[in-house]
Length: 432
Image (tube, rainbow, N blue to C red; front, top):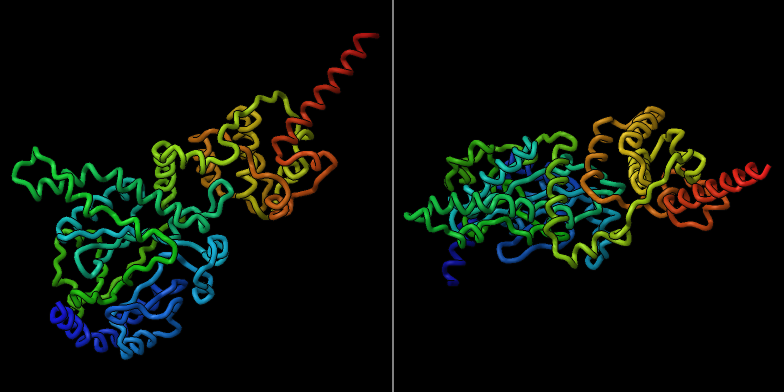
């Protein structure tokens, strides 16, 4: 065993300095490393963490010191060097600016990995994702990447950057579930002469690895070498996957391509929505109770003929049009209107009319997507008062605000008071 290990180490060390001195390799790795935590590996063990590249030649200098491969985070940071081991989730959320979805496919057999990768890419294409990155892992698998740029940056008032690893794990689980039947079928075709006897075990071994979707987990950088094979983690075009062979990852023969595809803003919105819908139906009961929050059993009421003066001051301020916080305002309006039983047509009319008052207005497509997302779920109450509304400058409390905790409570109470006044006035009028 020791002799085998020694042979592998000798083999890779023969090429590391020469390979990592290539300017095109350095540039590809350096560009990809921006805003990522990186860590060199010295054959058996990793270097210090956190670390980052400051200059192109950092890569060749580390290779001279014995680095055999380089690994990086799927999380994107304001400054990776600000990461401190032991930081809480809240502290990490404050310095994380985003994340890529990285799907890790690995198997004992490269052919199985190719089948899985092709099926997943087809599935992503079906969900309107046309710009997908893929690279060879360096051994017997592949990495598929969907860039941060492709994901919506805010959903129902929640910053997507702060939802790691929850959102990527949900998407990955959704992909696994929706592609497993086709994976079983295709691997059975390849592995068994009797295709009526399905191979259920092999597909389990090639399904995407959820371990990678965890805080500060690292994966092999594009064009890094692999210690066991001395092959490069080479980038492929999706149409090259079918005919890919291990010799195509020979580090002395590779050509550089960009692993990060040029995605469109919000390109992965449909994938994320569908993954959420699937998860909300299929997640365990205890997880449903934990994640739906304090308003899980909230049932909307029906308020009739409500006037603008019955809404809280913060909402009346929003109605006038606002310069900042428009996406948070959409979240407030949709959930407030739904919580008081406003008619769908009236709600949409009011939101689109309100948006015209904003300078600049939100894109109509954004509002359409937020409405579509909301209609798929039960109504929930908007955020509670104070900090959330102070954050975009609309909190202007009156006397009644001191007695309530949520814009819905304010609206109900104000509407009730108004109805009582009308009832009292009618009684007085009837007496005379």
